[in-house]
Image (spheres, rainbow, N blue to C red):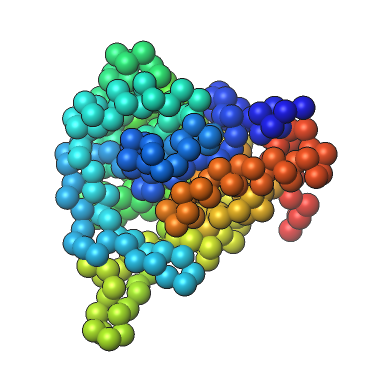
Length: 316
């Protein structure tokens, strides 16, 4: 039994060499980290956001380290779909052969998600279908047409986003949900009923860090999203609750910095595990986590890591 055999897992019809996926917002579009992180050593890479038009993002500073993790308010800065199609999709197609590529999609309106997916899908087909394996819809964005309410906070808006995107592609759609939803299980059910092939749990939590010398927020925007170790138990609980309610694969994300952390998500019901903040602090972390997973399997005589998904022994 080889490491490759032990760690391989099939999710939403896609074969991943291992369950570790670089999280959106921390891996750029791949090319930025090509000489820093072993991109071919992880199971997948989720690109940073792609919107219809370029986004300048929020005022700097955008990221700050905390004792318990990190806080950021990047503002979904990205060059827009046209630039991503011309500069990044061809690179993904030609440089990553073993690693699955997921593209994170954002929008101001439901139609924006569909447009981005449609344009990227056409671009990927022209590149031989090797550039994109799946999409991740970030539905924590404000719906401008609905007065700024997050898409995920309104069931009808959420259904519309997913249905419109679903009509534009046959590739798997993962929907990324916020831990701040009043009923994340209910929202997950809506997403799956609307056509989501999988879910990403969870997004960052809102927070505020203050520079006490200046009596002002550390971030230029003010508040931001908190990530890192403190988010781990929040994401694990959300994963466990949702996995018991819907039968689609889950990408567990939030606070993962070790193989043990990744195993918590998988035992709670996640098939894949995202790594973000840890990789920003230590580019070697993703590959180290992969090795720790393999070592755990060998110690416990586990011949297929996929078999531990959802094996948490706890019922309430």
